[in-house]
Amino acid sequence: MYESTKQKVANFLADESGPTAVEYAVMLALIIALCLTAIGSLGISSFDMWSGNSSNIDTFMNGSGN
Image (cartoon, rainbow, N blue to C red; front, side, top):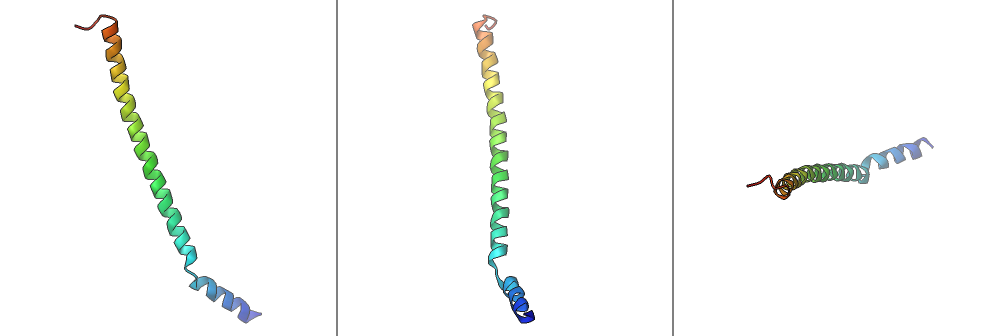
């Protein structure tokens, strides 16, 4: 019984599929974080652009422009 447990532990330590799965999970998490950051930044930029256009249109429509 002791040899069986010892062999199972040795097989577990020699198996490299576990660390590979962890590495893929970390890479996936970093890619998702990067995408969310990029989308958030793009959203803020486009909101600022459209807000500026909206105020310019309002000014023009109200006759306050030149």
